[in-house]
Length: 74
Image (cartoon, rainbow, N blue to C red; front, side, top):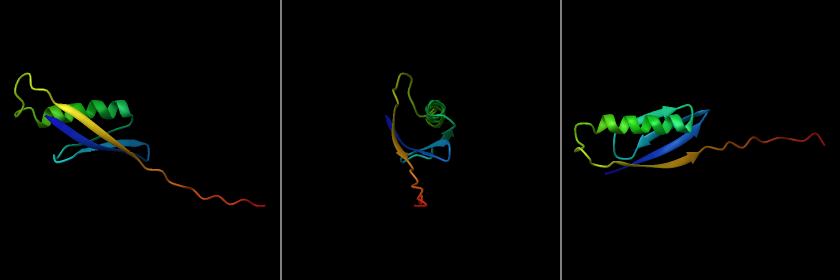
């Protein structure tokens, strides 16, 4: 089973939502986010996954960049 996540970083926090499933989580660091994604996936599928079945988690990262215009006093 493959579960894909769209992951974003905005305003100092990471957030992730699964594509096609109602799984959402966040974290202050990327490492924390990955841990939270794994926990959320295991909880979501705990009654559906057979012993020994593998779940693959894929993430796609989107980073918001905000351009700040500056003016020079020349």
